Image (cartoon, rainbow, N blue to C red; front, side):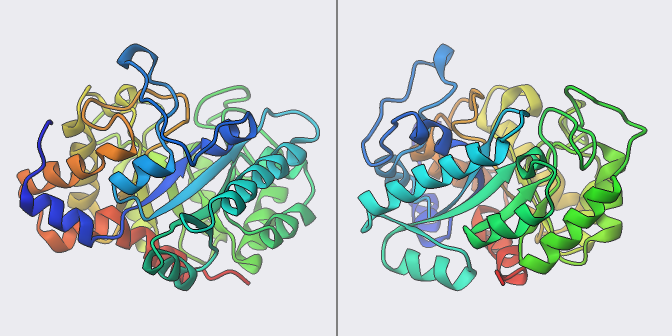
Amino acid sequence: MSTVSTEAAALHRASLVFDLHADTPKLMELGYDVGNRHRTPPKFLRYASHLDLPRAEEGNLGAQFFGMWSAPLPGSSRAIHTQIDALEAAVRKHPGRMASVRSADELRAARAAGQLASLLGIEGGHALDGRLENVEVFARRGVRYLGLLHFSANEIGAPAKGVGRDEARGLSGFGRDVVRECDRTGIIVDLAHINRRGFFEVLEVATKPLYVSHTGVLGVKEHWRNIDDEQIRAVAQRGGAVGVIFAPRFLGGPGIESVVDHLLHIRNVAGDDVAALGSDFDGFVKPPDGLGDVAALPNLTEALLRRGVPEVAIRKILGENALRVLADVPPT
């Protein structure tokens, strides 16, 4: 998509654009300066360098959950703290352009000041190093969501795919304690990457709205990474939000329309209050054509308008649904 209509540009500029997952802190840890404009790599190498402040400003990205991940090794928590340190250093270096926020009110204030509202999420509960007290440690550092699984089994449960995959394995006793501690400390539970049995067992324990931060949906594309309609409805019934990943291999198509297909399937299954953005930018995925980096986000608003989605529903998809969950699970 090469042009954005006046109508779409105005709607996009007037909307909060809130993405639930980008892995940029790992790049920051390696010296990537998010304040500089970086060249979008050629298509065959487009696995990272998707997000920086100049392109975020161009794409009107208002709020970003930065996901932090680590290898499933002893001492994983240290790797997460190092990435938090890298993000905090970037905020100090660019205070007029980005701000660390925890609450919905802080997010709104950052946007009013023209700053990118930056939030912390963890991808993979192995980052707790098997210690329940680390939930509160991370909460005190500002972490707002915890993805219980990534690509390997851990003390909490089993992944949808990866080392230790086991469809018969559910949430462990420690995992149930982690979910309860997240509820207590104001950390949103993220159900991305967890296997189906664990998914529903988390919902038996959790008392607050949840995210599925970055995923596709089985109703559009059959893939192990994607969730089914029953899972979508269960998250909706709990007041949660489901972020659609910008990764063609999970979406089933090479272009921006595949993202729209997944967003609209969620809307058809569960109504206007669930679908959200979960790009996985800088997560070593190649984005769809038309969404090569954050500067291209207005193309998504254009695509949604072309599919006949009402403006009020587009605003919810772009950011209001994600913001509602953040507001409903305030930090303690």
